[in-house]
Image (cartoon, rainbow, N blue to C red; front, side, top):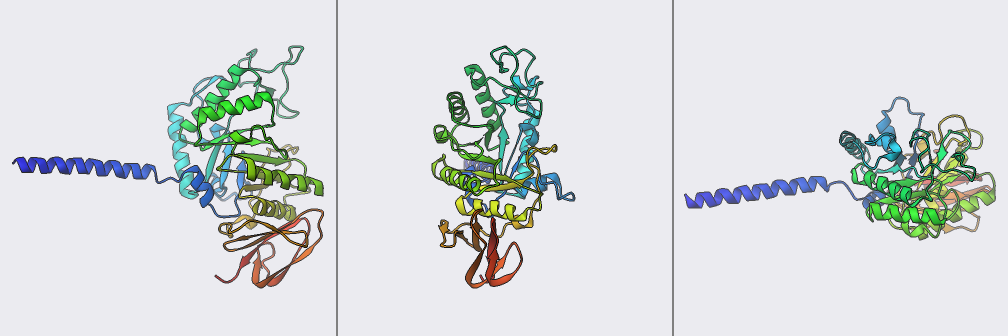
Amino acid sequence: MKKDYILLLVVLVFGSSFALNRSSSADSAELSVAERITARDYPSIFQAWNPADNLPNKDRWAVMAMHDLVWHGPGGFGLIWDTKPTGLAESFTPESIKAGRKIRRDLLKLNPNIILIAEIRYRDAHPNFLPEGHNWWKRDKNGELVKGWGEGGFICLDFANPQFREHVAQRAGAAVQSGVVDGVLLDWWRDDEDRIALVKAVREAIGDKYLIITNTNERTAPKSAPYINGYFMECTRSKTAADWERIAATLKWAEQNLRPPRANCIETWYHNSREDLHLMRATTALALTHSDGYCLFSDPNPLPSWDHRHNWYPFWDKSLGKPVGEAAAKYDGTVIREFENGSVVYNPMGNRPVEVTFSKTRKSAATGILSERHKLTCPDGDIYLKTEP
């Protein structure tokens, strides 16, 4: 009887331990942020707030999951602030956290390497964000509210106020602690005393595990770089060779100087229409040759429609695998980089059309042509896929 009792205890303890281990294993099945960044294949596209809208027959979550990195306001992932006006809140409703975690699980099932980022507003917000007359609204020397930007009707926030900066940091902490997102986005970024104080507070609040992405446009921000994992390069200027040189230099700098794991995101806008395919390919090839980051080709912000809407292009369908080396500048002015399944060639604005040659047949992702020789216009880029294992 005593032996039977001891055996029963052993079975119960072992069974409990086994169940706990299984649960722990299930919880840890999700890759870390750094692992997901490394594990993804290329090309790698990101979504900035608004979706690809040329796939009407696809479910919205399926379209989102085609992108490897997505940011949105917390509400875009199901999170709801627990206080009104929402600008006063520092936590989310329990029900919305539960809903947001389900959205996250569903997205990870569709794309196990997707990264989810919540924008935390600190520079400007809708007039309903804070109570009227609140001291966190920014005012000019005459006491008048400062407008956020020309369109949208938003009002600037006073991030020079240390109390407000701490509040922003607490909101960032709440976002990552919800278990729904992998980091935060801080828009409208440059190096100044108040922003550096802000990013330090945000980093302290979220810890080392999560990402901070900032929108520097085509500029670098070296003083805040130690706290930041990636730039959102919202490239508002891309019509001259000098523009593209500046974009490439900033992207290269960010790849070398920001905090790992790095998640740099480069976006250019079309010049005439979404059918500026050579510009889409040039943007993609620039990202592929000059970084391990993400890219986007989208509508220009001045359009009356929502910003950052875009097409999904077949050129973006994953085909390259992973990079196997660094980029190399060629004598003809192009830049080439090798991947597991092929080569990427970037031909920058200001160069000339070139002929790209290989020792074996390659398939152009742009034209579908199978050949050892391919013509590449300028500015442009292409993916040349191996036709043999």
